[in-house]
Structures are given as structure tokens and as C-alpha cells.
Image 1 (cartoon, rainbow, N blue to C red):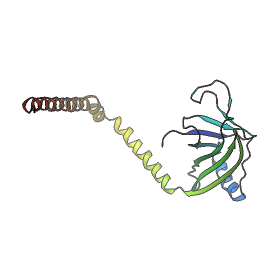
Image 2 (tube, rainbow, N blue to C red; image 1 turned 30 degrees about the vertical axis):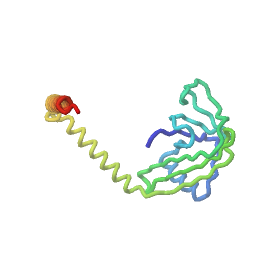
Image 3 (cartoon, rainbow, N blue to C red; image 1 turned 60 degrees about the horizontal axis):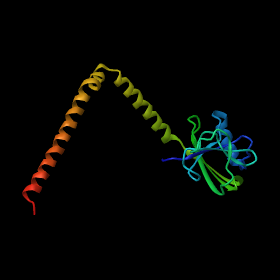
Image 4 (cartoon, rainbow, N blue to C red; image 1 turned 90 degrees about the vertical axis):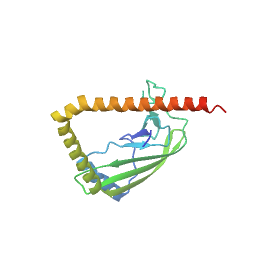
Length: 187
């Protein structure tokens, strides 16, 4: 996945949604409100947090940029397109939402934006989440058994020590053989 930046669209910033997009978002807001947080790889990729204010100005959240400033900083020197994305998941509905927003920024101010909201079937994600939860539950139960505690505290350290010693011995043996070969075959 790599590094990214976070963009938070403040509640004052008005998104221009079509009626169909508004209905999709409203379905999700009934179950779990979207906090208008998106990710982007279009700016710095330094885990900075940017906030788009109601007037469209972009500011860096204090303490999140690479300089770790303690005050709000305007982002006046940036011009270009910022592609943001997020997914909103909901187990109650039969779909999740993938939201892509492209912000046109001039001198640190969002001048316009394009929104793409696509519903995506969530059956596979829900099944994977359930399998993961089952595996975690099984692993937790196994880690509490006496057999696992003995394995972890006794058997695993012995095997690790034995393997590490064998690798070091083999490495030293290869080094000795190479030295002898250079002495014997000196030309």
C-alpha cells in the first residue's frame, strides 16, 4: 500500500452530489456516518493530514507534516489535481461504497471537484471478514493451551538456536574452504 496523505473534507465544504449519489450516501449515513476522510497519493505521501475548509482552502493539520509545526498552516503553494479515495463498508446493506473525488486545486484553494460513487457487492468482503475472525478466535484459543505455551517457551527457542548455529557453522565452513582453495590454487 505504501505511504499516503489524509484529506478531511470539513462539514462546511459542500459536495456537489447528483440525486443518485446522494441516495447512496444517505443509505450509509443511516447506519454509519461517513466522517468525510479520504486518502490521497497526490500530494506528499508523508502521512500528513490536510483539511479542506468550507471556503475550499487547504490547510495542514498541526503536528502532522514532516516539519511538525504546532500551528495550522495554509497550503498556498500547491496547484494541481488531487485524487482522493475511500471505501465505506456496511455489513447491513448488500453493498459497500467506493468514493473517488478529484479536487482541482489552484494556489492552495479547491476550485472544483468531480465525484464518483460506485456501489460494490460486499459478499466477498463479509465472508473474508468472517473467516479472519474465525482464524483469530482459533489462534487465540490455541495460544492459551498448555501445549502452545510449552512450544513457545521451550521448543521454539531450542530449534531457533540449533538452526542459527547450523547456519553459522556452515557459513564458517564455506569461508574456510574458499580460503584453502585460494591458497592451493594461487594462480
